[in-house]
Image (cartoon, rainbow, N blue to C red; front, side, top):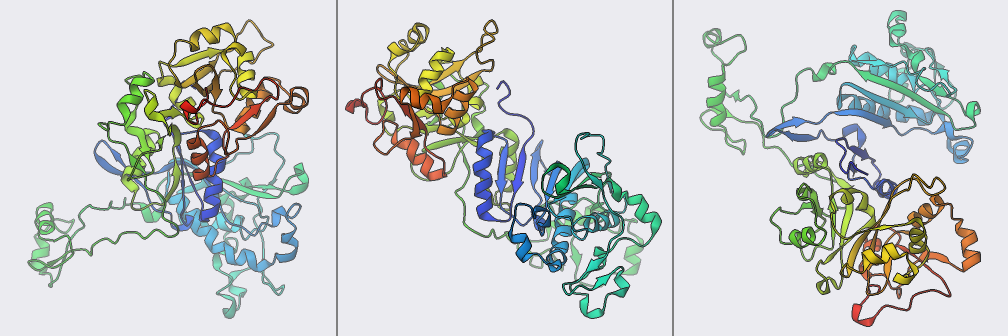
Length: 552
């Protein structure tokens, strides 16, 4: 809670656009400003660049999880389709793709970093064959890590070192030389184990983990942990970044006498500079020098996502927000962004400074599906209040360390009332809570629960909720699933509470007392609207018409 912006970040990729949106939905439960979801083919995922002290540098990853597509024969216990559709041809078709993805992952791994290659298949063509081929082509740049001591309770079997390849019609091959020429399009040399016993032993394929279904009543998995010792052989020389001048090429023949007068490197820096200045940006010839062709803009496939537009530091939108919530001067307002370039900004999102760096330097080469967390939402009737934006529960834990005003400290009993009743009046809350709320103007507030160490029978972890201070009541804006989570943390059995008090936790209807923008935002991003609980006896009356859709 006290570290709103961790230094690290996670970039999650999936080639399937629909699965990306599912990934966004699952990642929202983390409420982290350090997650980015992108949509690319992992075998050709673009190399990202970042700005380091005014200089473009390539972004390498410290950790990579390479969960490749597989035939899925390890899921035979739960996936009935495997029994109907599985053939040996599946692994033969996937082997090349798996190797390309693993190779691309190794290329983007930083030296000293770790990459986990995993499948839910037990076929060695998809497992050890990929690892052996990757180790062989790395020429010592990669090695298998021994992780047997890191998970002592895990039951597993070591990787195998010998296997055969079977065709769809049941024909077996133990070496590449025995494969008929007509089968070379289906069976490749990388599918077989190395012949040299010393090379095979040096790979330590026994360090791979084979997790069988009957070991721990799970599915079948293959896991290999790779450590990068040095750059891959074909990446020894760092690639030039986009925009850097390339070495020009002469159009005419080179004089041998002239070559002898040049340094060992070929052409000195002075001549390179002079020739580069004579190359026009469009790649046309000038003074007998032809330049490189103009770089083509990468075409991103699929649906075009809304842009990520960072709010300028001098934007008049931010000062009222900063004044209303008394934000700390250290608040990184340059990390605020919106998803629209026209009209009113309805939601404000926030990312970490590292992800901001990634977005600004890679907007044209990477397809970003989602990043950041929602921190503020516009009120439809915001003109009536001092601030047009209310707090969003999704980003409250990120914002809280910077907020110095409009904070109400509540007890555990107050939290239960606020989460089980829709708009509880002040009289239902404790006197301490009422004394804090009466001095605040109407608008968005922060409700903070601090654990009491002297009362071990109460909840011993802090809770931060966003709410609304009305004329005579307080309301929380917390999604249904989070409400249930907090209530269970406080030992409240929701089902028993329903029967006892008639409380019902359900999404708000269209005619409810919640602000319409909350429902609109939920519908826009596929998130369930905030839940409300209404008691049949103690429910607060409907909202005052003068207040529009906001609670009293």
